[in-house]
Image (cartoon, rainbow, N blue to C red; front, side):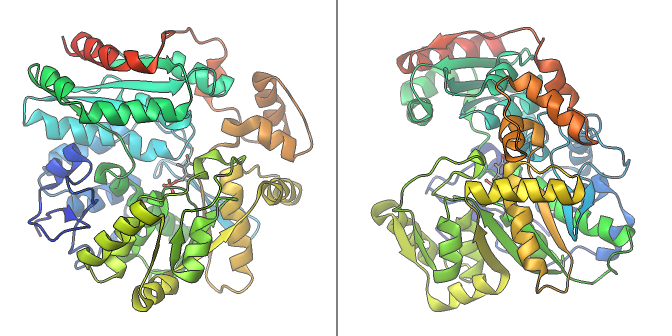
Length: 496
Ligand SMILES: *Cc1c(COP(=O)(O)O)cnc(C)c1O
């Protein structure tokens, strides 16, 4: 079946997958969706006979028509053959049994964060889409710490692409700063920006809208692009590990093919859990999705009441990647759950932009509540979960995973089906907070890693261990007003 992507906000004629990957967001502000998703299911018997890369191939062939089979195989191979460090040969996202919950480890990639699963392959999807056009793409990313590193690592030396990352100088952790400053790659540039994250972020948004910059770059066949989590090229790779988790449970003899399972997902922008919903539309038997949040509990309230209300204080927590008040990818769930009523979706999104809240109709609300249940945990509860889990099992959770694990435990009490909690970061990415939860305070981040590694079986990931002595390759610090000229100059340098 040919696949065409259209906006969540308007029934326009669709565009091909390659164009959707290049554009990222629809010009009307909506997100790209494929209306017929779910009309053809994946064959679970085939899935369970396959391995991670085989399942990736099935999912991508279904959703990325326009890419040849060979192009997709090259993307899969480049992204997943040498980058993830796991013992099992058949997966890149292993399943660990921790107490009575299955933990899906998504953090075995190059930067020890689950975003690696998508950011290792998105650059190759982009590169193949660009190859047909003779254009080159310069990715601009403002980062509060984590996404920038995962994006640079993914784009490093990928043909037809370059990347400029901007982080707030002095406002990221010592480890994050070192991760970015030591990033190699001929097509990679990193800048500290004076000010805070919002200053860098607003300037990046301005640069995307700057006609003069656009024209200047267009003369060199360069387009500006983003690696944002609303791009279908980031969403689709995440569907794969839901099927692969199911396959692993079948292989372990814990379920039979056709049995249902539930997932508990630490959620920020709603991309990860939405990919699970896509997997269920494509035939994965899922009973419930548990949406785990931290003290920023806008989604927990939404799933209970059908009212999404962002008018509340923003709270900084020990699980910063979930400190979000606007979950962009939720828009795609609204599209499918409302019966593809683009006018309704556009109305809700307009309410959100103008009033800061919207309310679902009864029917859409009930459809969503039949599949999704929310729960949230404040920092103290997350610390307690980390401590209790370590004491009971010896397994160390990071603060994001702890939210999913706590909610999975809760669900397990009255659930007859296995619950799989998604582990989105290595505890070594948040070592000091994790150690503190375990009752140890350590000021030095490098010593903290060693202390944590002495406490359990899982060694420090090699890239993090190597970081302390890695050479600094980027040390520029600029003012926000200098970002535009820096981008223009670096674009020429990278693509000369
Ligand atoms: C990004 C991130 C999340 C949230 O994922 P979404 O797709 O935005 O819901 C959760 N945990 C970690 C560690 C992350 O980096």
